[in-house]
Image (tube, rainbow, N blue to C red; front, side):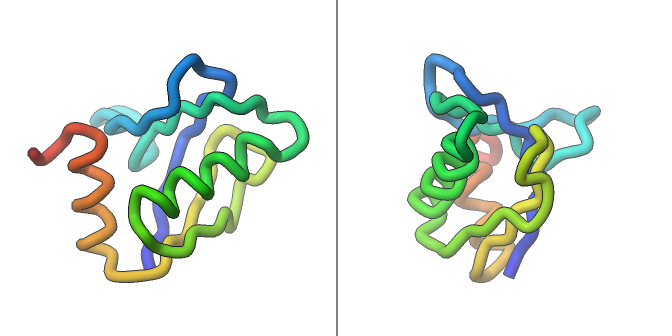
Length: 91
């Protein structure tokens, strides 16, 4: 099991994942097309990360905030490598 700090940006034109950068206190930034209202952005985040990793994902903190702590079932190194490749880092 692995935990990641994710910053979300709801209501963007495109769905995507990027590296947070060296000065952010998060692991990744995820742009979401859904608005934060009605839990739509949270659902999209979970679905996006589950599809990207092939693992079960849950939000364990920050359900109503842009900064979230997500928990992903599985081997931490494998999950991080998949997400880093997807973010264009470590290719």
